[in-house]
Image (cartoon, rainbow, N blue to C red; front, side):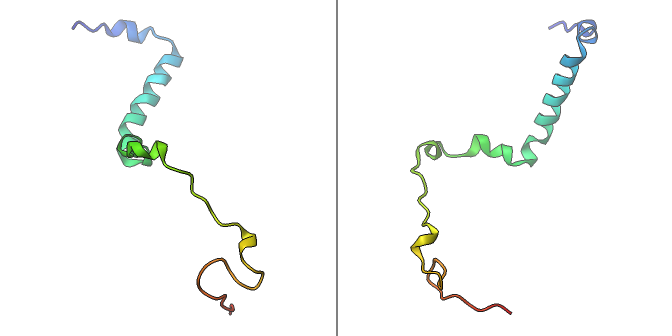
Length: 73
């Protein structure tokens, strides 16, 4: 390979900014949650939706769950 640095020096400012953002992203990628983009299981894409219970499933005096409502301070 014979890289030509003079061509990069003449590149537009928007390209320089684009390259710098890419380099910063590649540098911080392992330290962010973005790293899970490659480690998430493939089955995640095809899992069923999670069905939550609505608020009307419980009476007004009791929380949704197995424990009775506790009084506050």
